[in-house]
Image 1 (cartoon, rainbow, N blue to C red):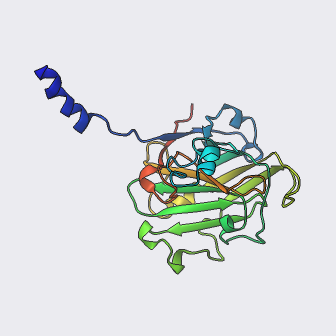
Image 2: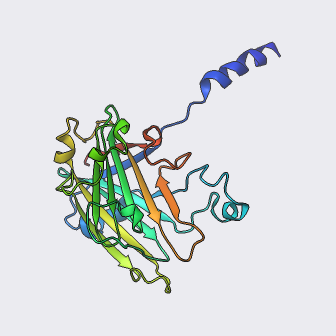
Image 3: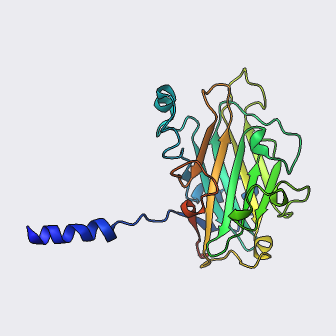
Length: 252
């Protein structure tokens, strides 16, 4: 019995540290990558999840509907080449909503949005990227999380990543709440040279972190749904500590 009691504290105090989630991007030379080409069929697909404690204090009926269950599932995949990191999302959606009129506005306040947060692991700066079903774009650059909410990092007329590209495909009708839609998909190309201009390049072996996220508005659901990959404990898209490690696999 003595050995058991001496061993237990070691387990409780030192043995169980949470493993950092990973999201891997394979190398591609597919010229149709922005048109959802064949390369995406071989890429790993990562599920989007609601925050683990998102509805802990909600009404019991809301908890019944949403706890550990995503109403409109989505999957995210990653690829890269010598010029871009590509992020592709397939998003089920029963009500396609996008009420904004242009780029570089807070698109998440105007309807459905797919978001990407990208950060060097050993630096404070990071980017926030939004794409809407209208293929409108918002890019924000934060010198650090301590600058969050300052006017200087809010939406600017000129994107901090001017070379960013995106394509969107809709399976449904936009802004018609009386019908039921099926899905939308989005592919984003993030220019590696423009990331590296801040001092740290994204390449195989480098240490970067990523969060992908989604705002889903719907007249058919009792609540707006927010999901992420990796899953967050609480609903805070700026919680860098919970981002996934971004792995760029070597070209085969």
